[in-house]
Image (cartoon, rainbow, N blue to C red; front, side):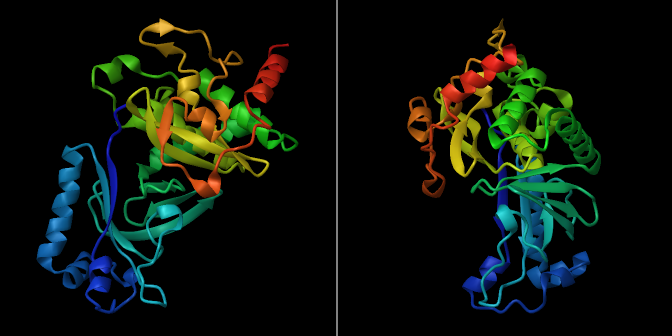
Length: 316
């Protein structure tokens, strides 16, 4: 699938470290634009802003930031690859220099709010540094949908596996792949994120994968984005941790209700169970990705057999 490009650029501080120049003041002291200009220099500041504006024309999201150094003089690292706390940043989304207002931490993500704009930047623990940005209104709409899901579908006594299956069945019942738009090259930004999936009910694989992360976070399940290839195209899916073991899961490929204009009739409680809770070797038969050794998927406890039994009980 085609992926709208998202890039995060660490600027200024990295150059300062390489040149052996001490960072003179904490980044949070940069609250006014003229202070940023004095530190970066007018030319460098303007270049960064122009690159951010150019990214918009190319369908990209870029974030530039000035971050404080840690006690060893190294660039501060943002939680889950997000914007470092204490940083002041400029994004292609807002195009204004601002510090963070707050960080909201979940099992597999950090949600960061811009102090001036209220835009929420979400970084999932995916090892790729991508940020998903939402206006304050969009964010609240997603939060509302996630809260409704949790209230209606999740009980405190559910196992990790049962929670995961509820998430899967909710998504396949409520999200449709917009094939016509995708094939025509008209897929939108919202098609590639959780807003499209959870609020509008339409998303491509990137939207499915992020929506899965949102719902898993709300249930206390750890998850990961996986970026790779499937059917000779760029593709996104997930890994999920159940009872301490990691599993591969590609909801988009297992459902999508409609493919190339043909209704397949999967949907709620009627999955084909081909890409749910696989091991790395099983997923590797037709998916390619960069393996994560510390999160290798080897367990078959909640694999296709367990999924089949669960779906059988749900149909009764």
